[in-house]
Amino acid sequence: MYDIAEFIMRATSQVSSEQAGKMIETLVDLYNRKDGKVLVMGAGRSGLVGKAFAMRLLHLGYNPYVLGETIVPAIGEKDVTIAISGSGRTKLIVTAAEAAKDNKATLIAITSYHDSPLGKLADVVVEVPGRTKYSTNEDYFQREILGVREPLAPMGTLFEDTAQVFLDGIVAELMVKLKKSEDDLRRIHANIEL
Image (tube, rainbow, N blue to C red; front, side, top):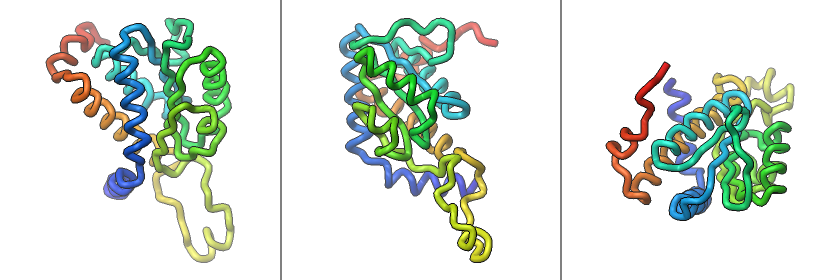
């Protein structure tokens, strides 16, 4: 836990405040217009991070949807899509992002690679550090003989954990910008749960 928390703390200094600011500005503009939807997308564990973020967007008063659910409506030019992919090359997410762009939605990419296929499609890119499931260290000599190792957290864990904390920070900043209190969020929180 300490290693993961330490990684996230280091990552906070690497996330661009300009990139995060553009994401916040896009979401504040959408909220103020009152006429658009947010579609959040991610595959696997990144999708679970996206679901948690979509839930908080609902509590803030947005009209969010999660790709893959049966109730997703058509997306268009008044809407914002948020695609989460550490590698930025998850085919399902890149294809869905292309469809969003084809339908003139604004695309925000949360990825570790701004120059990835997803990053290149996006209107706003927020680079969130993390070891994605694709290790960058493929040199056998370094890995095995010298003992140079990736962090113990497997595959995309560091990206997913860091993205979750980053998006929770976005929610906190949106609360300030939209003048929302915890009581405001609680009023929208589900009152019938499984």
